[in-house]
Image 1 (cartoon, rainbow, N blue to C red):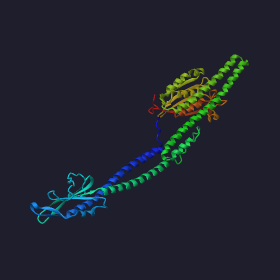
Image 2: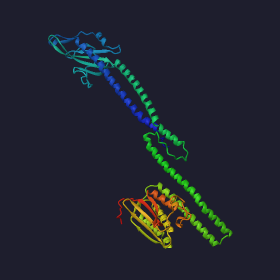
Image 3: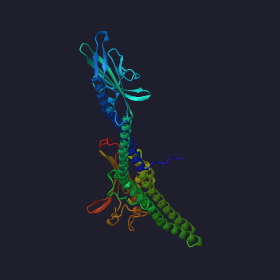
Image 4: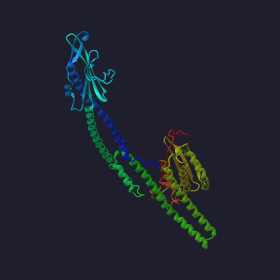
Length: 479
């Protein structure tokens, strides 16, 4: 079972809130440690003041080997430095030779290997230690002392239990957590509201598409849409436009097929019934039936060709084809018709590589040349010329027929456009030129039919198709 993909809103919320939450957690830890350092710095000043008070009460007595340090400080005097009775202070004073002068004899000796950062002068050191199984903060002061005859350096150790510091640390942590929690809630609410508003157009478009019927391919509205959604909306509208065009083409194909095939089928049924009743001789009946079948077959083939052009229009990746080879092959295929009408036929081509499906080029040339053969009177001239210039290739089919009338010119390339009094070449289903036009448009080219005139009289018709070259290096001098 494939996992359910995350929604856009959930992705945005997780992508924004998770980094913010991680940053706030890290920031909380950093702030807490900074607050602890600040508290240690403040309370270390109290320890330093206590040590200095002890140092002020020291004096040197005796001389020579009998020199010693005496302290006049009572422990009760240190109660002033104990804050709120929540912490206790212990001290020890060592003499010039390390002997104990006063204080608590079981205090651990001074740790000279402490690597903790010292913010004070070199004669004062602070570090964390343990005394009587309780964590303490230790301050060591090297206090110079002097008497009338002697002087030296006493060592004063002052230790304070951490109850007050821990209480302050917990209070700092609680205050920090409350503020950071409030910040997280505010940020989360803001992010949720912003993401909700930002994704509202997406939900609106989704609901609009969901409410549409299966046949509604009208463009999606782009007014008021965010800038980031415009490329998606434009691409969707272009795709829906292509689908609408394809659907309309299919509807038109079904409509035209049902309309155009109904007539020859009805005629064929009438002819068969007439032959069965013996109204006409069997040979004549078979000849009429064969003629009707030929026309119906031609109509069906042309309608299928028109549908195939639309199918090729939707495909990509057409190969490069030499148009000259296609033109010559089509002329060779239609040579029996040219010979049957005794036409003075000529053909001249240049190499013309174009990007197209070979079937489309063959169908284009076949329809143009077939129309010209039917349109040209017996024994007249018919020529095919393919030339190239810098960027395009031009195919011109010239016949000596009656040309096209103004009435037919307006609807010349429409399907089933025919004229009752037109020459035989333009009679029939009326799909040939429509197929040519669709093929040329699918190849990004142009098609034009122009009457040739001489002294005001129409002497023939020029059908010209221009297609872009696949290789622009071809020029007029290309052999």
